[in-house]
Length: 109
Image 1 (cartoon, rainbow, N blue to C red):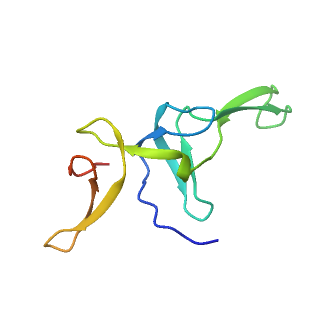
Image 2 (cartoon, helix red, strand yellow; image 1 turned 45 degrees about the horizontal axis):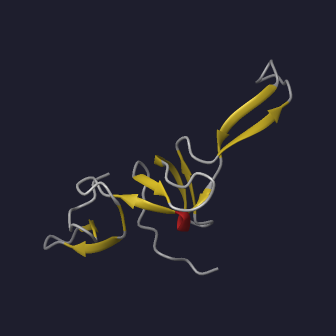
């Protein structure tokens, strides 16, 4: 599988553009670069049935987030408040920053 550059980082705000949660906005909790998956807060929730154990005295139904493909989300720009693509730009001091393609504003984390 080809590795592509992932311009989404932890704590970024993203909008889901495909799937059952299309249109929802959430914060990135975890990025899995090898599998091209994201874990997003309160997006793609699943229910898991658990058995009682030493850790979990009472079994039952536990709800949690499941991973979602990176291709199904777009990063949100703070200034223009729209989902956007990202481009990289190198500053004169050697640092790289992420820029919103629509408005040209730096995307903060």
